[in-house]
Amino acid sequence: MYRLSLAIWPQTLLFTLLLGLHAAGHSATTVVAGTDAAGAACPSLLQKTFNRLQDDAPQNLCQYAGKVLLVVNTASYCGFTVQYEGLEKLHATYNEKGLVVLGFPSNDFGQQEPGKGKEIADFCFNTYGVKFPMFEKSSVSGKAANPLFSDLAKAGAGAPRWNFYKYLIGRDGKLIDSYSSMTKPDSGTLVGDIKKALAQR
Image 1 (cartoon, rainbow, N blue to C red):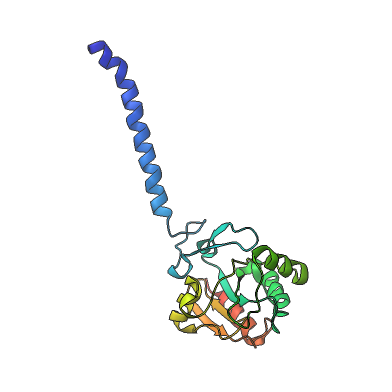
Image 2: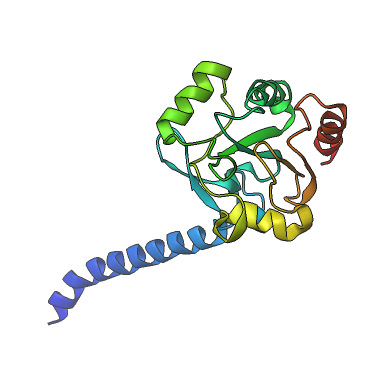
């Protein structure tokens, strides 16, 4: 029995150590929950996951924690659809400084986004060269509004009244202001607010 115990003991010790490491791994996962890839705290507004437009891959918005975000509800067949070009220019111009434009296609207004994911994605890229992140088509108003737009409305911005409403979110994950469809991406007011938000650290 004594020899058997000695023979089994190293295996038991190894098993115990492995259990400890496994538990430690789970603890680390719990600690980093609600943080972005860099370990920064993720604001509650961004603690949401949406599928990417072109391939349905899940994307957690916490990856944008610490960035300035311009959230826009979009449509492919609207009088304001030409704003895609200006939005892409904004994204390209200020992305290195911390701005990310996020597009959310919606069919809520005038049935002007009838297509499916890849079809919408191809249209945006082929027609306007859109490279900023776009997410699955969803509702952005009323009781069926997706969680982000629902929370933006609760934060005081109100629901979009038409396609291409814009919502500016600061690095702290809080709503700065909202802008109507009539506000063009190169509007002095919008660009000025973006620059001020980018200057905040």
